[in-house]
Structures are given as C-alpha cells and as structure tokens.
Image 1 (cartoon, rainbow, N blue to C red):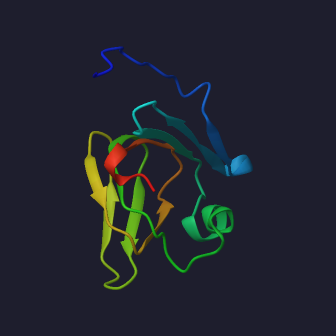
Image 2 (image 1 turned 180 degrees about the vertical axis):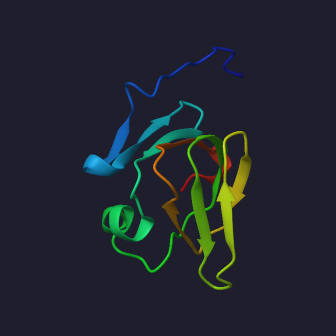
Length: 122
C-alpha cells in the first residue's frame, strides 16, 4: 500500500551537518522515501579544495553529481578534465557532473539547495 502521508523537514534540524567552520557548511536531510535535500552555505574565500576536500577523504575532484537551485552569491564551478568554468548565479537551476571543483567568487555568501532522488541514493 502506498504511503499517502506528506512529510516535511527543515534544514534547522538536519540529519547530518558538514561543518566547514568559518567558511560555511552543508546541512543534509533525508526523507523516509529515500530522497535527500542539502542546504549549502559557503562564505567568501571558500574553495572546494581547501574547505571540503578534507571532509570527503581528499579526492582529486568532487566525485558527486549535483542537482539544485542557486539562491545567493556567485560560485565558479570548474570541470577539471576540460578546465571549463561555469558561474552559478541566483535563480539558476543546475546539474553538475562528477569531476569538478569550485570556489566562491566575490565577497557575498553563497547559498544553494541540492536535491537527490531516492533512486540515486547509495
């Protein structure tokens, strides 16, 4: 039987939080059906290489695919294989393949929401 209950969650009470100290963090919520949502906040000066790599075991590039909605600031995402750079800006809906790194451009805080569907969970 299908569960017809509406589930709501808030990022103020995440299931997990990746703390990047003064440079930001990512709050992760997991829904009963298997999907997940992440709220990422990166402060000016944040870089994937310095601030996030140590939390992931120091891979050469980000191994994850990201889908989300961009809310504030400016983030530059670079594909390492091609060196192609894309600037994300408020209002962008995006999908980023694995093999990238990123950094905050400018002096404004970056905030974005990431989505992961249940079928893409490991």
